[in-house]
Image 1 (cartoon, rainbow, N blue to C red):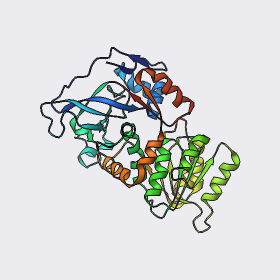
Image 2: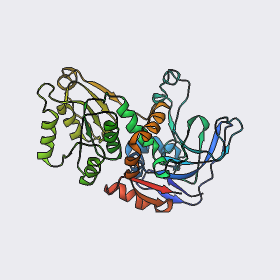
Image 3: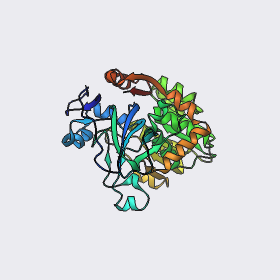
Length: 351
């Protein structure tokens, strides 16, 4: 079958028409014919051979990458009960053990034995993928494939925003990529009174302004960066926004984070810093009384139900707009070039 693989520790990926068709190896697995699949930031890091990911993936190469997708069930294992051939589905691609403390206490997204399809095992940048029945999410038949292709990422934004108080609050979002834009719209749908968002890409900021952000700031401009902090701190009784969501991973965003949040405020960290950070914890965290949460994955499966519900409440138009490019799997290089240059938002492949 057709697939996109990581075959070595060197930067880049390989397209093949000779990848082995996946087979159901467990009676509780399902085989899914992929209809659409989307590039995630993690896939870009895999393309670039990020040091940590390259080390993690070394023993599994070659690996079919990709973990955001939707498709149709083509075959079911003998013990499958909830799913049937023809069902329109997506799937949680974090495969958890079900036995560790976190799994047993309803926090499988923190499973200490997590395996991720598309990193540790073959993923969905292919014509077919196999996943456990437990992980599949049945989708409404009228949900557009373009949106269903990246529910994983929507879930990250939904999970992040679910960890902070939003209604009647002022929220700052650092990073206006697809996650940040979705977060801005979610914040407004959930009752935020003001949403401020930063980035260095004018195109992304324009889309953010059209989808929930009340103020946008290009922080590559020192004056705009200064204005962002000043507007965050404009209320003399608070001197900062109520919550900050960090989605860029950039070191300067972390500097801005601690300057723009009020004492007693909330911080949610989704962005992945690629360089060492210097934080004065005494001044910025302890004395400010901040609540800081690190965000990984999505709650299984609470987040999935929340985001599907929020689409009905008005999120869907924004999600459609975030998809900027459609390509056949064969044109994967063009898709990754778009992401590497920052010329688009979501790139969707149609195998």
